[in-house]
Image 1 (cartoon, helix red, strand yellow):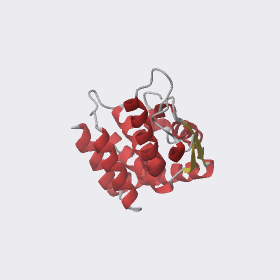
Image 2 (cartoon, rainbow, N blue to C red):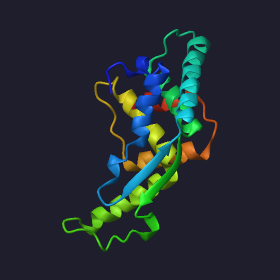
Image 3 (tube, rainbow, N blue to C red):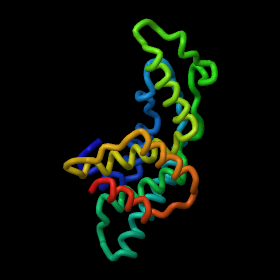
Length: 181
């Protein structure tokens, strides 16, 4: 990512490329599980338009002209979680077939169980988790000492995003603002 990513995300091609790359990346799910993610480009373009609309709304309604990074990240999170760019997730091996007792040499049972639990969580909350991680990472780029968040916080955030399909950008921007201060 780049230093002024919020400005660059205003460009549809950049948005689709950067956000799409983040959504397709499954490097964090360990060596034991392989995950294929299908991201629909038209949904990314739709999310881009929704993001721009959210930024414009802040500009007009708050008479701020140039919304800060908290507001822009709130609009970004709202657009991404609402549009749901990931249309399918397929694990290999399938999660229900993965046996943590039969792992390669050097992989502890605890590591295998952690990767399996992460895979199960991602299988349920893939759009919410990826939307939050992208918007959170972007917001952190503008902070001197970004907030560190726990797995429990991420779980709560994903549950919150999943339980409502029409959260406001205002409520989401306030989450970023409160996290970073």
